[in-house]
Image (cartoon, rainbow, N blue to C red; front, top):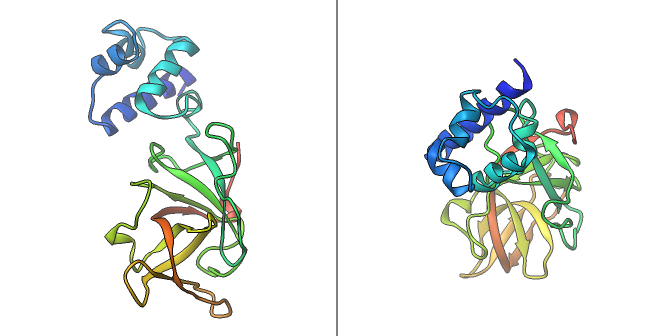
Length: 208
């Protein structure tokens, strides 16, 4: 399959994933009403980078996710501690972090990637593992996060990957390590938590 067809297929897949249509995306991107349809149907065989950037902005993905259609990727925001204390895990300005390839079929819109540092979650997650999560709210802990392995920011701004459990009183949480040799962090206040949705083991991680 040629690159143009892969770009067309990727745009079509993103549009379907978001429940919208070619015309709506075209108009939102400031293009002609048939602009996106012509790209998807290959009437426009060599779309300009400027138009692909506009389409990517409307679909809320990085333009590289469309251009490198055969290799979907997500941006790495930084690192999270699994035993190691990571002061600020969102280490990169948005759009400047390294990217990592993901298997086609894993959604890339709204997904954040972080790299595990430390071994307190081994053997479930090893150092160098890439975790993918979606943060649904700026603050707080969703009900479905309790009992799950989550990416967490504590009150001091440290990033962690731990199993999250309710603490001894409301507003406090236990951050549990899977590795039996690592300590559980008891009764911590946290800013937010988000369930890990997907993971990429170190031996399959490919940064682009």
